[in-house]
Image (cartoon, rainbow, N blue to C red; front, top):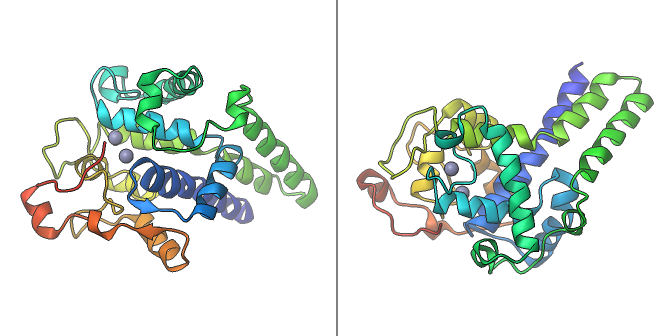
Length: 260
Ligand SMILES: [Zn+2]
Ligand SMILES: [Zn+2]
């Protein structure tokens, strides 16, 4: 069972690293710069690995920031109900992919700077292929190791994005404390933040969306920031340090750099 848990943790971490660091901080908010080979690697491997299309994710996420907690928000627990956010985020994602493929301006204009298309898996409607692939790999791992926990750990770790998304989208806009009086219902939830690489600090993030670091107060720990620093040392990402608000800005609650 321990081996299964370790496999689950590694796969879960891999998925949240893709979405939090590459899709979110780098692609959606330009808080990190990706060297061209890294960008290409993410755009080709992102959809098959995580089951989530990078361009569609960025599009839906920017719409979320633009219309945060209003009726136009693709996933707000304030309007859809807390638990229904789990379904709503999926429905909105499907609509976003269709909107991009039909080239509807509401969707295309907000990602005009993303110079690659929706992944062919999603274009052809094969969104389920990555999940089937992970299921088969998980089953093969079970058979070859004779340990069901390893197979289950692999499958549930690799298919964890909907749960991770729900934790951020539902808890991050309904349960927690607020550092900033930002005009939406975004909250900071420490427990959620630990499980989703700092993404639970939604109030901080909506206030300073362009900041590569989501923790703003000294008692907050952005677990994703450790990976950002590590990847920066390895040359995988470049941190836009100028986007991190100063202590004085945080104290006063002023915004100098922002996008979406
Ligand atoms: Zn949010
Ligand atoms: Zn964001």
